[in-house]
Length: 356
Image (cartoon, rainbow, N blue to C red):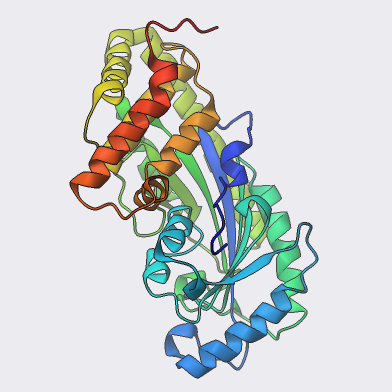
């Protein structure tokens, strides 16, 4: 990773039949080693010893291509920021990387974070609604990791974790949803209330700790104790399918009954993205969301979903800095984001260019 170009993650490049609503699925397993204190309570020497021990076991994992292990302090802050923006670590780890490691698999679909909140956090991300596939791969990695360690468990409670809310399976399963029609019709309020009543969590674009400020939502399990991983996944998949149906109905309603409103929203988004000179990330995310909806309901010519995925990713601060090859602050960041989006979308939004 140090000194190398950071490629787009596979889950952004691959396609899935349901990805116009479901962007990605993720399963994360938190594990800790027995007889070791949690990372927050460990001193520097303990963290270094544990990091080296876990690194040796990770390199034994049978996966093709093999996992690559990195110590975060060997990366520059821009590289760490990019990985944080992709959900592979917390922003705090990007700022304070000492004695923390990260193993990355092909396409960044598989990752193992070491010495962050827990000793081990195995994460698998795939495109679309693929929670079962994520779980299967996570379990395979978990089984191989556990061969070299005695994990911290309790015969009544299950896996012990740094955060009490993860005790039990230690699993957090989540799905990133794009729900512009429900947001525009205000149906999202009723949907979110129903989701919360089912003991599920709803978060914003950045997941845990992020606010609900855009049209992208992460829905995840809150219960980790007293249920199997498969039962948790089954419930979450069922809920996600219901939300997908509600979003499809909302889109049909917009097209049929409120076409003028929808065309106005899409037209405004197109105009701003074509001509703006300064743009913040949250505004960019909302505009791209509306434009994506416009393409999906055929108000504007089709734009590949992978293009929207890449624009969404690269509009973030660290990704913009990588494009600019320098640190961007304040106005410079807003100027660069607007310029990059204008250039990236010019081919697709030009009224003069005839496209099939």
